Length: 98
Image 1 (tube, rainbow, N blue to C red):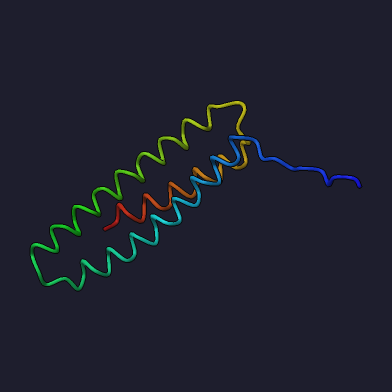
Image 2 (tube, rainbow, N blue to C red; image 1 turned 120 degrees about the horizontal axis):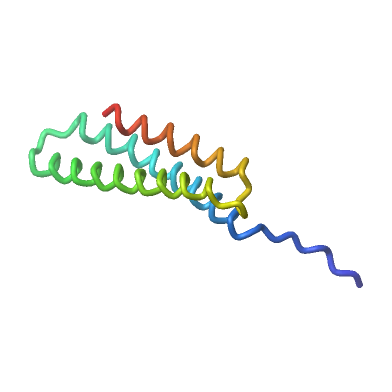
């Protein structure tokens, strides 16, 4: 019985895919935080939400920096890297507007 061929992703491709998924998750968290901050009436809770917002922006900055450094890696799939850079750039712009 013949074994079907195994298709493995290159390490850089799986890393880029994971980073894209994290960016999407952060965008969802950002929308939820924005809605919560807009409706929050408690100053203590608002301070906590704002701290969470700062952490989220910091993580997005880290992802954006990693995407930029991945572009310099010749082993990475440059189309995937370009997609990741576009995704992180848009997400960071969205966070910066608030």
